[in-house]
Image 1 (cartoon, rainbow over the protein chains, first blue to last red):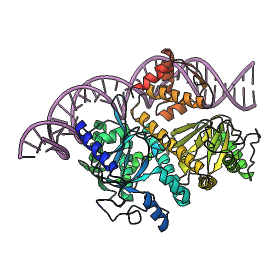
Image 2: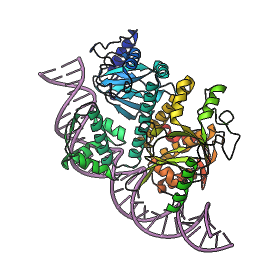
Image 3: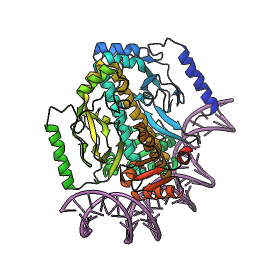
Image 4: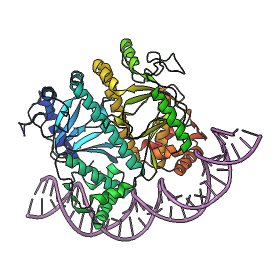
Length: 262
Length: 262
DNA sequence: ACGGGCATTCGATTCAGATCAAAGTTTTTG
DNA sequence: CAAAAACTTTGATCTGAATCGAATGCCCGT
């Protein structure tokens, strides 16, 4: 999509390398001290609602892969489904490519969020997912997650909740795409990002967009130009301040009012 | 939405009645012979992949409510989440109503399909769901489903798959809404219905739409007029035959080609 | 059978956002 | 460090679908 062929080659090879060095390292090479028990995301991610011993068991099945460079793929459309992934740091986007070459972004993932659940039913991933920046991931082999869920009712319960949450979120987007204007979509998107950043203890009013305007447009069903124009318009109205990828929300109440009628 | 106040009153009271007559009748009043084991949908619905004894255990927790009349609500937005539902016969639609009164349909449900998973995470249903025609339902109290899933790995596995399927489906709709034209959306919708009818052994080429043009429009992010015009246009091109709610797909290949480029 | 209320269709017009075109800016890379 | 590639912004124009305005048809209850 946005990457050249040669870039893709590199990514592909580094990805394969990572797979070859089995058995997977349990401790993240670039931050060996992180385990689920000590991860700052454990209140947000899978371990939520698990007790100490349960977290330890979960820890056992989590594979902490080497970090992903910008553009590296976690998996590609139609790859066999094997794992779900929890973002540890950085960010990812999922997208599908049509025969006509037009890509459509189906989701963005920030730390603590789970990637890959679209593959559970069909056993093949329905989209491709790549890193938007230097990022790290916890890979959770789904077969083992199921087995462990069977032993730990709390984990089963929580994973049902995570999937239910994904379903509810997807339906909100359905509503957004089927009835919101470009400005409403954009405001809603910014507010959504804001609260997701807040969840990981980042500023909800000032943040860096990990994705391009084009990515946002594909996600929201708009063109790059429209996204850019709406950003400019919101800035002119004094609701946000834009500097490249850096966004500051100046008037959250007003942004909420934009989507308030819906 | 489409029902008058007085109609709503009726529905509401009948619904409350149904809840009052606990303990729930295990055998459907209007068709006492149906159990999961004998249900013609059991290859499609929850019992899939369960053995005879497991199906019997599932049967124990399923509540077969009285039938729902057209317009009756299964639940309403923000009601406390208690159960998921499997459609036994008829059809349902889910919708959200905005403050501004504009409703948006978020889904249609045919026999064998599961309703209500959007409430699992938040413990409150994110939408309202009502019958589009005289319909019957199997209610599955979620707490008991979880408990049983914990005992039956096959059930746990299958429910993960059902939820994963819902997630994958929702993401397809995301793509549809963010990049398809009105004609592409409509063609895709008709083909989707067609294959869902086929799954329950109904004709995939000739069927009755259980929903109005308005419902379809809200679901696809189009207006009633546009849906109507597209139907007319597809008929003029000889791809479908429309008579009120009755649809015949005359050229499925051509319909596929409409969305083929995507 | 009939009247009233939805649901559907169709035509005319408008408009939000796409498309087309091009310059400017930031990031990547050899 | 400079060239190239990728991304962003702005302006002009176009267009698909919304909106507005009716007329007609169908279904439901009495």
